[in-house]
Structure formats: structure tokens, C-alpha cells
Image 1 (cartoon, protein in one colour):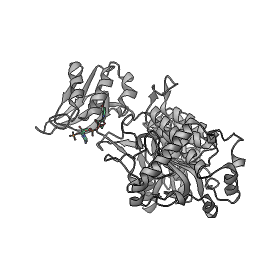
Image 2 (tube, rainbow, N blue to C red; image 1 turned 30 degrees about the vertical axis):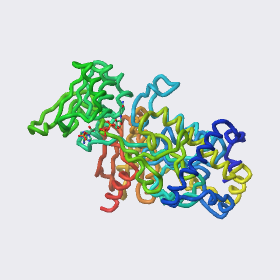
Image 3 (tube, helix red, strand yellow; image 1 turned 45 degrees about the horizontal axis):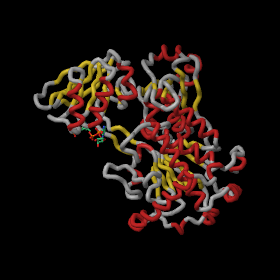
Image 4 (cartoon, rainbow, N blue to C red; image 1 turned 135 degrees about the horizontal axis):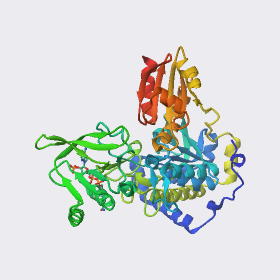
Length: 500
Ligand code: NDP
């Protein structure tokens, strides 16, 4: 596919020399010098390895491979694609990242109040408009020891990347207790500053004993009627200075020690309480609440890159100075995968932009220009997986369609995804469902139902909430899941019925 054909004729403006470019260049140079010791240990390529002419004999090449599709990844793509670099984003297990799990966001610069999903969808459209392509797939392996760097995906692609931007984010540590997944986004949350304004005249519980727990309790207390912090030990781990802040607003925040949370309780729609156990006395009781905020730590999603990139003891990817360059030349990182301080979507977007500029600068430095890119394109070197991706989902809009296509199927498996436009977790689930449907299109029929539109189907099946996944075998309902699933979980779920 020709770059020149695919992209509108935009001037390679980001390829022009600018102050930012020069600082990005200096950073890359710094990384090259400082990284020498690391490279000799981990076998990262040396400067002399970046010979573009060797790329002509490769296939499945991209100029910039972005791993992750949150604010950092999509913002990076804006800059690389707009600089006319062939940019491929691998969306990952959570397309759109953590913002798609929240409802309204009030601290995204330039937007007073907007759904997290809508922010991500605007960013995605903007990146696509400049030519960035998004693959609904997940990275399962990466090799940065030789250039071009290679990345393997769950769907079996091997991609050769001239530069890589890692924006895989972080995940909040969760408790894994009953009710937690079920009420996620409906009273169970991690971002207190996002949700605090919705807690006027309501009560909240924060779980954890670190600085984050206190910070979240203080954020909530600015709005909520009452906040309880549940700590599992006899004392908090939080810094004394943070604990002193709690004392200052005593009466509004209580701390209960030695409590383990066993279960999150709800009315089917929203959280109503938690079941706790005192680990000293064994007493079990229920505490009523409107919301549960988890503050039990974060883990960056860096397992894939261990041993290949230097990381902090907490597992964040180490970046150089003010740049987003890792110690491997041409590999950059942005967002929560490298930031353990700010952890805000706006900061991730800004760092993503820096990573995009750094990647463009790196590619310019190794000699990639439009003429060379056109030559690679003419030789069919660039990655192109898109012609093989027709949508395998059928929308069912009426009871008669449902009866005919699903219940009327005398042999085979059908999976139906009930979603609603207003439901962030549903909209996160849909692309996952769509990509899994492509993988199983020979064996399974996939349908989607807009629960807000096709109310007759919802009433007939008594679907209590969305997202809901219903699995039919030979026209009979055999399984139901009322939660979001990752690509892997959904595949395993379907496999278990294909095998039986
Ligand atoms: P921490 O790892 O510091 O604290 C996690 C807390 O969660 C601990 O109290 C831990 O308990 C508790 N916990 C872990 N697992 C469970 C569980 N299964 N059930 C109940 N409780 C559990 O994470 P934080 O996010 O609080 O902080 C991360 C870093 O960020 C720290 O370095 C912190 O200083 C920093 N930070 C700084 C802030 C500031 O300066 N304003 C604000 C927020 C964070 P236990 O103690 O028993 O292990």
C-alpha cells in the first residue's frame, strides 16, 4: 500500500528542524551514550545497525509501531502519522485504555465534562484522519535485541518496526473479590478525583493504607457526606505528613483498621455496601456505602519487556531526561508505563506527543524520508493486515431477527453481545467482540444487540444490564456473562463451548 496514496498530501512539517526536534535529538544521542553499558548487557542494537537499505528485503514493516491505544498511544500517533510516518497502533486488550472505563471526565484540558469514551473516540478519529491504522490485536512478544525490532501479536502477526512507542499503561491492583467486577464503574472505581463530584450527599469507602488511600479519601471528602478508609493492618503505610492531613478534617473521614473486604454488595445496579471481616476478632459485618474506591497500588503493564528495557524497581520503564527515549535507540515509552508520579490522562497525552516527536526525529536521523518510504511502499514492504478484516458481526434489531438467526439456529454456536452507547464498558467490549468474531468466524456466529434500541429483545430475554454476553448452542441459551472480558477471556469462554 502506497504511503503517498494512503495519506493526504500533508507537508512533512514535523520533519522540519525545530527546537523540540533538536532537544529530542539530543535526548536520543544521550540515550545512545548512556545506553552503551545497558546495550552491552542486554544486546540492544548499536548505532551502526540502523541501515535502512537492509529494510528493503523485509516484509511486514512499519515506521512506527505504537503498542497501546490509550491517551499516550493515540496522541503519539497524531504526531507520527501527521509526519507521514507509516503508523500502526496495536490496540491491546483494553482499546482506548483506562479512560474508557470511567464515565464523565472533568479534567481533560479544553473539555468541561465529557465521557471518557468520547474523548478516546475523538482522539482515535483524529489519529486515523492523519493515516494512523489501528489493529485490534494484542502484543504477546517483543524483541528489541536487533533492528528492525520485531513484535508478535496474539492473532499471529509478526511485525518489523523501525521504531516502537510503548504506551501499554498500568493497571490498578484489584482485590479479586465477589462483586468487584460486577459493579466496576457502577460504584467500584479507582479514580477518586474523577468521581468525587458525583458523591455529594453520598458515602464512600476507600480501601488501602498508603498515600493514595489518603489522597483519594481527601478528594472524596471535599464532596461526600462521609468517607471511611479500610486498612488491613493495625497501621497505615502512608507517610506521616499525609496522615496528619486526615487529622485536620476529623469527623468527615474515619479510618478502620484490621479489616479485610470480603465482598462488594449491590442492588444489581449500584453498589450498596461491603462485607468486611475483622482479621483480629473474626467479626463479619456489612458496611453500607454508595461507592468503593480501590487504592491498593498500581502495576505498570511491562511484563512483556522485562529483560529488554531498563526498569525501575516498581517495574516502570526508564526514560531519559526530558525525552521519552528508553535506553534502546528507537524505542520510546509514554504514559503510565513509565510515569509513576502524575498518572493523569492529560500528562499521558503530553508524554505521548513527546514520544511521537522523538520517534519522528529518530527516523529522520537514520535517514527515513518520503522518497525512501515510497520506495519501500512500492516494494510491498509495509505491513498491511487490513484487507483480511471484514466485520463478522451482525446487528439484530428486532425480535423476529433474533428468533430467526439465534433461536432458529438448529446447529452451531451463536454469541450475542448486548451493548448500549451510553455504557463505557460496553463500548470498550465491542471492538474486542468484533476482533474475536473475526478469529472464530468459521465456527461461531456473532451478533450484537443495541439494548437501548431493541427493547423487545431485551424484555423477552430479561437482560438485566449491559454489557451482557449470551451464548447459544443449537438454538438454546447455554451461558451468560454480565461483565466485560478481555480478548483472551472471551476466546477462552468460547473455546470451552466449542470443545464441549
Ligand atoms: P502503596 O503500595 O504505597 O500502598 C498500597 C496500600 O494498599 C498498602 O497500604 C497495602 O497494605 C494496601 N493493600 C495492598 N493490597 C491490599 C489488599 N489486597 N487489601 C487491602 N489492602 C491492600 O500504593 P499507593 O498507590 O498508595 O502509593 C504508590 C506510590 O505513590 C507510593 O510511593 C506513594 O508514596 C506514592 N504516592 C504519593 C502521593 C503523594 O505524595 N501525595 C499520593 C499517592 C501516592 P499494606 O500496607 O498492608 O501492605
